[in-house]
Image (cartoon, rainbow, N blue to C red; front, top):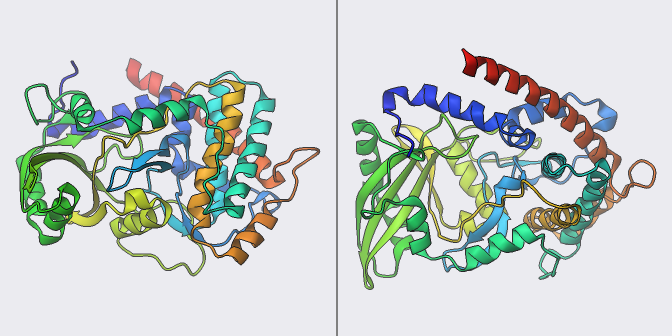
Amino acid sequence: MAKAVHPTARGAALDRRRALKMARSAHAFVRGSTALFYRWLGEQPNHRRPPEGPPVWICGDCHLGNLGPIADAGGRVEVLIRDLDQTVIGNPAHDLIRLGLSLASAARGSDLPGVTTAHMLEELIAGYQLALEKPAADVALPEPSAVRAVRRRALGRRWRQLAKERLADSGPTLPLGKRFWPLRPEERADLERLLETPEVRRFALDMAAPGAEHIELLDAAFWVKGCSSLGRLRQAAIVRTVGDGGPRFGLIDIKEAVPSVAPVALGAEMPADPAERVVEGARALSPHLGDRMLAARVAGAPVFIRELKPQDLKLELEQFTRDEAVRAARYLAYVVGKAHARQLDKAARRAWRADLAARGPGDLDAPSWLWRSVVDLAGRHETAYLDHCRRYALAAAA
């Protein structure tokens, strides 16, 4: 069992953990280097730049790990974008390139040939265009086995599974160790004050059950979770609510919101507060998630809050076959396309779909800007990944 880290040593420990996570694979490095992605994308020559799609809320960090099954307040489950930290009103082409790069990186990690990446990008565009054509339809697309397995597991999950994974065996407490570290006394006090504010209290009670009137903080900890959030305020809290059906436990996620590195569309109007921006973007892109989120502040820092549902899972597509890779590209692009399309009227969807219909080089049925962007960025990320591994190895040896 890993030992919990004392708050005074938290910063250095988080830096080491982030470096280790990003050194584990090229795909992990891609996931953790959003700022580099946009910097390099902006350095491409003009003839390789993506087209300016209609300004809509975009994920901003649309890689594989940021999609997965999400439950709405009533427990209905759908595969959606699940992480909106970087969401902005921007160019939807950026989500397509980010997803294409993530798929290409995962394909290389699965030792698939380069031609598979070409087919994946073709299917990515096909799935996205299908969503623009039929955004409200329930289109039955073949699911990759990994997506199907995760979705089925999500449908069958209940609170006891979430508690078994996250909580201590002794009761409704957070087990200090690898995932959860102790809070400073002032951090605990700040969290208690947060739960006492009328907005947050009403939010937690509404999420609990009809008739709930009492809420109590049972335990809280610093949550070591994710690559992009390491080093920011991230807390988990167990609360107990009492309503018509008796006591109920809930696991609350409190996460600091920071300015996005994704480019914003010219003239776009968004909330100035980062937490409010994340919540508004989530409601546009993933209503299941956005409708159970709330923007707030802890010790002056903007945070967004959500109650975790047992059905909320992330996709783990680190290894897959050629057929699974191609199916994943089409299916996940359709998920992203629906998130964009629901924000557009019919005319805007038709115009954007026409812009995407341009063929790529040779016989490639994907736009040349998508192919060149993914190829160029894959090369730059691979070089940066190897440099990162070298620096990490030298630091670890020292």
